Length: 191
Image (tube, rainbow, N blue to C red; front, side, top):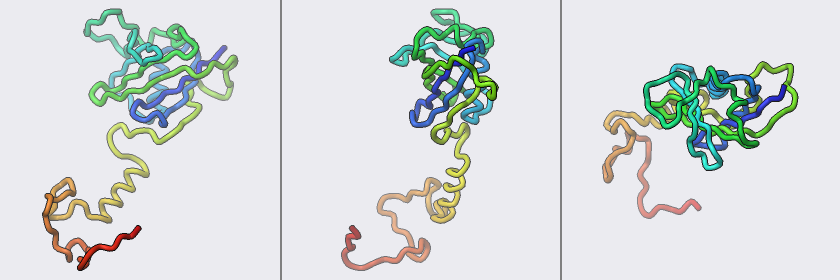
């Protein structure tokens, strides 16, 4: 059985993507779950796919669950729609929208078709990860730890300073409190 290979780009940064292999007979619900797993997102929110063209315009919608919202064309359901049935072009594109409040948007593009499936994989499968996935609810991993270290090192939330860490223009700080020494005369250019 052939296998479809899709590249799922994060819309905010196209250098962040996941390649997901899926069988044409598998449905969009399985594809949706594979995308969430690949990006380490939970499955607590609504989602939808749109069939798309080369200009990333939204076409026929494929919903996670029915809703009362009126549309020009009756939407399909993820659980009832095989991925292969919606592939009409060699570089078929979809737009995947997750969590309508946060509006996570991913651009999905067919990048290859393998003639045979890999017996070692359980489909759908993430076969390649590129770039650090965005954090669904805020900072995470190494970036989060580094941010905390930086806040502690520079004590960005010390008393007397606004919560955002920035003082008012022209505001003087006590040189003993911030550990900086004042230098007299003109500043030297370090470059």
